[in-house]
Image (cartoon, rainbow, N blue to C red; front, side):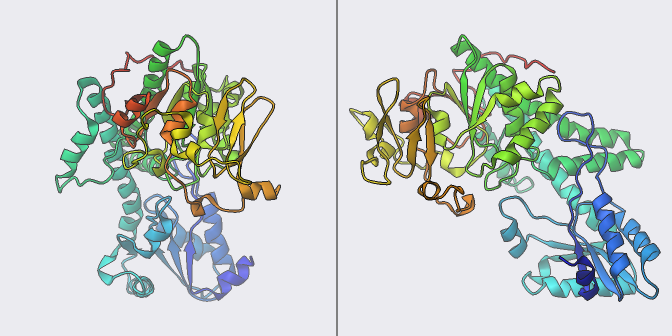
Length: 493
């Protein structure tokens, strides 16, 4: 792309470059400040190549008062006679629903300096957005308020998630049910029902980064107590991941004489995304691997190279002396059914809808059940390109889902391949977002697991009663379980 030509032709320029958090030696993806080098380079390019007046819009997440710095750079580096109007329109898109957020936003915030010319520039952006956003949802504020509003919104979300997760630990000790507690609290209109689902912890590229940015800003403003408050949310979130991992380790220690095989369902930081930034799943897998367990993970949006990068990065932070050995304990599977086969336990770490069974009518085991009585096994046939029964090297029959064509390698492990992969060595052509995914066949999974067949649900998306009837031992977040034991503490690096 010709940057010079694009800047020359544009009347309005949106700066949407990444502003990553600079690493800091703290628990979790915390940092003292944002890395604005790429952002400032974009500003300098705009100043360098602009030959007429421009409206420059901050879309990147930046610290409060960055607009003044942008204006200063533009005035220093611009060509004679060129004027710039700097606006701040913070980005509120969320992973997995970004296009929907863009088309139907809750609000569009437009911040400007308090001058007549800047106000006129802001009105041009109001007109632009009003083509698809109702005028009542377009909010005009000062440029500093706009910059701070993005950080403030994410800080409040992170605070709400951290609060419900902290309450989930209290529920586990007292016998209360976090789902019931959250429902009661959510009925209060001052609180609302959103973001009250207990989880292993928040992640992603925004919440931890924005909390760190607020902590840095508070330090700069000589507000150390406020800075510590924001940092404490990040630290509490990291500790919550450890609590969940310790609960898993304790249950397995009672049920097994040696480290076990764990199937992890979900590795992205939330459903409907393919990102691993700050994913609680990655940290929890490493905590389990540090105790000697072998991890095999599958995610519908799995991309192995970025996942490996995320694992290595977090391993080097959590266990710098054991990075390589722990990363090698985390294997990547090809299907949910493959990773669950011969596993002693399943850990659900991302809330993909197909993992849940609350609305699944086929989760009950039929009377006089046999392996072929499950919906998936029943769909197997000997027809070409359909599933079939395969004999494993150890004897016995393994029932293969009909929508996978599989091969058995020399070790007898499943190597599922979609039909499209079989016809091309280039791998699947369909993006995961376009694939229709069916609910899991928990009957089939139970029949191919090893005792004790524990299921640890980090998002309360399964019905524990239904799974217990099938033969699983279920432990859900925010609720006491008969399978609980006092938590073991995870060894530190």
